[in-house]
Length: 55
Image (tube, rainbow, N blue to C red; front, side, top):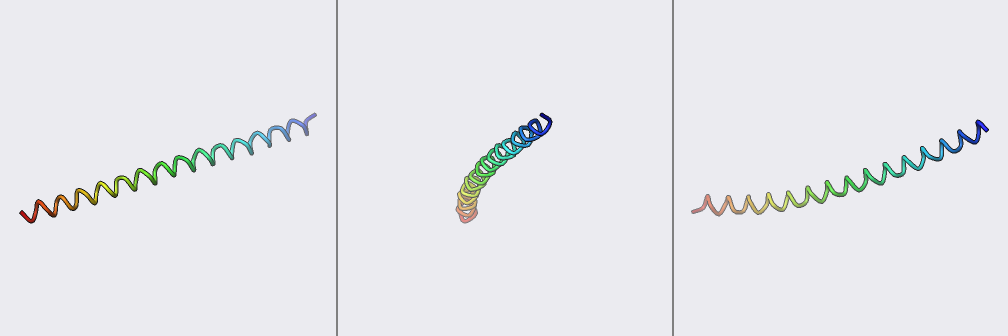
């Protein structure tokens, strides 16, 4: 009986790790996408700044 509980507990922990990994991977992908967007915005603002400085 105790062995069965240990196996079930271990199985649940493994599943939880996979879920956490998936959640973290998804979160990382969102952060990377956000960084890319911010870099594009930065490029636009830098170009605009150069245009304003050249006036």
